[in-house]
Image 1 (tube, helix red, strand yellow):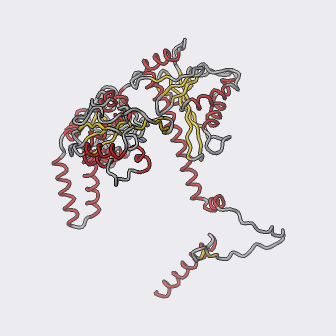
Image 2 (image 1 turned 30 degrees about the vertical axis):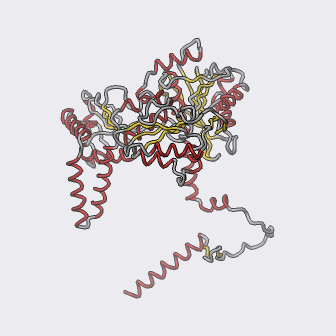
Length: 546
């Protein structure tokens, strides 16, 4: 789809598209909205909103995508709906409450266009594609680079594997999707694996490897969910037959299988075998989710299939005007939750590909609260201490996740070192602008530019690695709180103000206290004593019965 057409009035919609002729749409006021100024139309609201409502009532009751535009013809919001007529018209009804963010949207909308789709799933996927391409001002989601998953069968392998992936192979694989729900897809794979017994591991299994017969298969073989080609438990021909059956199932309507499972579920419910009925219900739901997928796999998410590592390295060298090829890249990111469990991450790329041995993670020690700039400076100082002293080499390019502020913070840290790095840059998320040291204006490249894709890969990998460590620390802290509830209470409750007891004073007796609701609060020792009394009383009752 030509995404440039989205920003021009009349190129996508049908009836009603085109410039508005009955009022002057000259800009009369610029209202700052975040870091962007949006123009307000001259047409008053009491005329503009009823006009848009009447136009919306002419839309069909069909699924599709709609584009709300300002008086310049620029798309400021993209949405999707099962019924374009109902959804779009609801924006312009006086009684509709759109919430604090979308309500402001109505101050700027002067026109809209629509794009009809065959299904709600197609509308969802096209909405995702267009939001990523055009980055409308009022779309808060789907602009973070996330993608919808695929089901991939690695047909180029001797024993093809089946995987749920957001990074499919460029060649030698069969793709289904993209799917709208990653969770539902994973559940469907579990149920399909019970029937077709395919492998989901990432082992390299070769038919010519005679050592396979000595390999011990995983537990999936023992529970009959994998035929264990890794241990020579099945021939290549028989395994290929199972994969062909799986592909036929995925490419068919699955009506017969679903009807049979529905009948089994109803039969189980009729004899009050509710556990089996519930299991069948979940399986039916998961298999039905296989229908919630798009058909144009590469057209809807082309960025996932762009894997020109050599081209990315070459174009990055040209972009940064470097004399030598870019062999090594290191990317830095910071993760925290409201200033808590703050961590830094560093990932390494060699020749455009991740180098996992070069990954590093840092628990921030010198910064408290929310201060990404100082966190970046701490990571830079700790990671490049030896390189700054001339005792090891810098990478060819150091990438900071963020904009001009994050880059400046990193450069300030490098200024304290004796030896400076050859190139430091940053990549801002929203507009994907590249800020470069000693240059005032950022670069903004095409979405398909190989250098940009390489930097995005490194930036996103650093973000993933940082988030993983951050979540680990949060989980570890929560687990420690469960093990030591007294310490948690001491941290959360203020210490009472009381007189200091004498050195030889006896400790106060441990007596129950009442909380604000009138319930008695027992200490841990008192609770153990109570439980012991109850157990003893129970044993006495048992002896009396005997």
